[in-house]
Image (cartoon, rainbow, N blue to C red):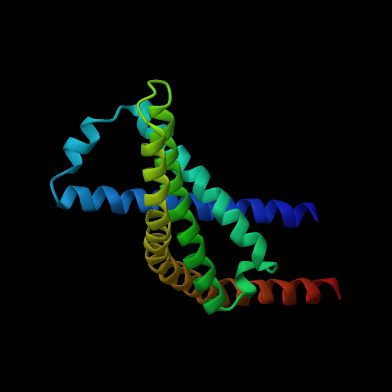
Length: 181
């Protein structure tokens, strides 16, 4: 059981880190192509950048952990369609979580100064009726890209394992069996 938990934790950590780093790289590359990377980074310092990355990673880790636990079986034993759909849905929940985080930050920013009236709060909540489904949908679109990429990576990795590692393990097992006789 402990080995299974350790493998699950490693899988969740690895997937979360891969997804977060890839997402940040894609966003940075897109900003660079539009010549808006330098002005955007000018607003950040190291502490804010690391904190933002860690917060995004924590959200991604939480959503990934929930989705991996729902598989119930190892990722490798799930069909490519199951793997893909799990990543798409996880992307949707990640998109919704990022939206809620942004809205929460704006609300907490307004609280100390009493800058938001009850009317303003009601507007934010009303807009969230639209914003939350939109952010979930955008997250699912991002999840489609990640799902296709991850299924491709797992497929290529499995193929390489079957062609390279598995025959070597079989040869080693045969050689051990013949030397013990």
